[in-house]
Amino acid sequence: MDTKKILIVDDNCLLHEAIKEYFEFMGYYAETAENGLEGIKKYSSLQPDIVLMDMQMPVMNGYESSKGIKDIDPQAKILMFTGHIKDPLAEKSLHEGYVTTIIPKPCDLDNLLQMVTHTLAA
Image (tube, rainbow, N blue to C red):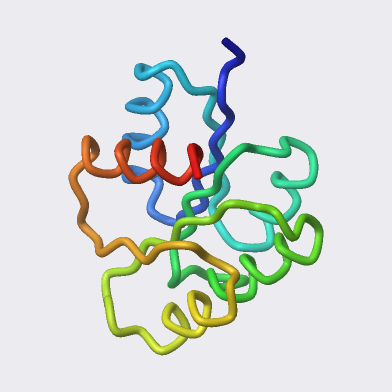
């Protein structure tokens, strides 16, 4: 079985490192990016199987970054994190097809793993 690659794009270093360690423990290869622009660059080089994208970040937000990734790879699978579940840009990202799911922060890591597994299987 080949190792699935995950890219975690979030400006909260403690959060993205915790998620990275969890997914590595669960057998994934994980990398992080601290803003949306860095996320697009890392997506191009890593070509991950799935992206966990924060909505509110400096330099480039999750909407812009998700759109940039979809411009590179229309088949990209992106799950979006947000502390504001009714965030208009998060909803726009979902309605325009840039992301498949909006995940409220904070979230349980086991539930997050289930969402990632489900999305990858789809």
